[in-house]
Image (tube, rainbow, N blue to C red; front, top):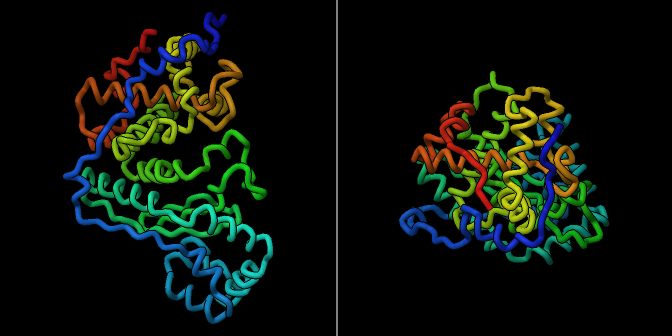
Length: 333
């Protein structure tokens, strides 16, 4: 029998905000920012939509061979001409041109994204000097891909990040589409990059291992973007974060009483880790991915109580050890 049910109490929301261990007040480390690193995002949607002839497209494929192969998949086409013909057809598509015009209006200036990403790369290189700064492109994906990341290249599909009021929308559930806005772009990229350094034990297929993996990813992102609000890192609204903290004891009790930490059934793990509008096993008012949120709290406590560096934390593949040594307990309200 489940003794605890997840419920939100609006009367204690203000208290919950004051109980959060993460603060929005911060300052960036100027010594880190003084590194010699200049990032320039290449607006490929401009270059490709300003192309007019097959020769223009052929030139662009030669100019950006990494993009031609890594994003457009040039080698998958029978001939380069077949890829060029497809690009010409896209260029002439009226809906794609409307989408392009909308992107030009909404993202006329991406200097803030560019600067935030440059600062993030400086922070990553501070912790990991071997980190190779990738080339960064924007493009019009036609809602085929939001972000493509390799160690050498990042492609941002700007059409995914148009306002939710726009006529054209990606085929995403509403609760996910709301996270596709400009403030989320850099945190999404940094969280994805964290996987390069996030060591795991491939033999550990427990819920706890998944929780700690995502907890480390979010902890990494917060370390790299210390002045970024938690809502843009985990994708919860401010109210949802406050409500989670207000009900942390209830959430934790649910995991403990139902012996979820060492659950290995993929279906059960997905209910608490995977994308969902809510965690219905607890309550339809509880946001989805609560296992990830709990994992973040556990990892934060481990880093604080054990005083390990970011590099040591990310290199630790032992989810059980991180949990046991975290001393994690829900924050009393």
